[in-house]
Image 1 (spheres, rainbow over the protein chains, first blue to last red):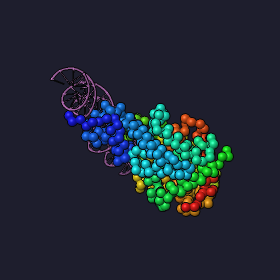
Image 2: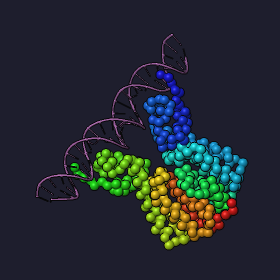
Image 3: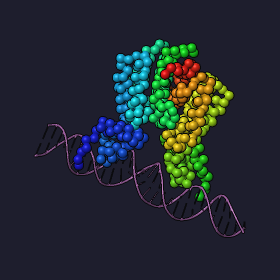
Image 4: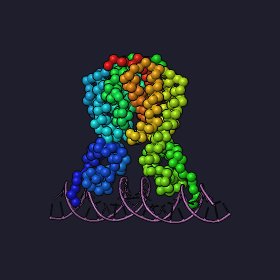
Amino acid sequence: MARVGLTPQRLVRAGADLADEIGFEQTTPAELARRFGVKTASLYSHLKNAHDLKTKIALMALEELADQVSAAVAGRAGKDALTAFANVYRDYAIKHPGRFAAAQFRLDPETAATSAGVRHAQMTRAILRGYDLAEPHQTHAVRLLGSVFSGYVSLETAGAFSHSAPDAQESWTEILNALDTLLRTWPTAS
Amino acid sequence: MARVGLTPQRLVRAGADLADEIGFEQTTPAELARRFGVKTASLYSHLKNAHDLKTKIALMALEELADQVSAAVAGRAGKDALTAFANVYRDYAIKHPGRFAAAQFRLDPETAATSAGVRHAQMTRAILRGYDLAEPHQTHAVRLLGSVFSGYVSLETAGAFSHSAPDAQESWTEILNALDTLLRTWPTAS
DNA sequence: TGCATTTGCCTACTCCAGTTAGGCAAATTA
DNA sequence: TAATTTGCCTAACTGGAGTAGGCAAATGCA
């Protein structure tokens, strides 16, 4: 019976593509099996279960995104680094909505701790090297940046900004300017 | 056969409670029926389908949240209004994680347009009356605030801040201070 | 009060996703 | 070429979503 050549990696990669096409929620073993022209049961020698599939897609998306952010931020500092980070993040979400949704997937703490999510936090902190922020303000700022990026992009991809002027790109640019200003003059008074 | 007294409203309310207990994702007709001690099929005279249940829980959560924000913001202005809004939003999410998750549920555009989501946007805009922002900067600021609130609270409830010092409350307070400063000095240069 | 109508929950059923167990044939190794 | 491993299969079970039709409880009306 013609072997298709399934492997965990191929399944996860195809799952990520599938997520971009039909949505992360809809990315299930049954749908993935259909895509490969095999029976659903055949996936279970390569995957523990449906949750395992989603987790692995999530981990892959986090890695990809971290790689791209890392490449974009290298050799940049200050506002330049800030906008590079932010734009890669937003572009990734627009180009790969399913992968981006996967990256928001709630991982159990142990898995999260060994995921590329850690690199994201480190890179956010790296951006702040270009600004003059001592602890604990730096941590507060890291959390603010994470919130703005993930919040804005989630809202935008959900269509929250698509039915009113001005367009989302304009707000994004101005918000990055505002964040740069804010970081340069972070109010350190408790 | 003992009638339990199911109505759409009771089902939605119980669904919201269920979501707070076991998570919005897990809130299904089957689980809800179990909770009422009836057969799943019995729900279908009151609900169209599973998606309809989730949509109605989402709409209810949006209403509740808008009511609470509205009450908190009334009679306040400037930073006072900003923090009142933000704290109600965050407290709601912490106290009602399932409802809050429901409020993020992706509604189809027509439903969203007639939902309390519109009031949220209006109230965010109302807060900015205390700051001096002309259009289109006001819209950009509305989007920033929405992003920060939803982003921060989502990350916090996902546990993203729970394994590092300082604690989330401290960051929240400082971020609100920073946003106040930012809004008072919003960089209007394009 | 008695009867007719409406309505609420039930049983029974279909369809489909997830998952496990065990089999057979293709690929791999020796 | 034979032995072994491995990949995908069939078969089966569980459980959720959803539909159709039935019966009894509640309601409306004389």
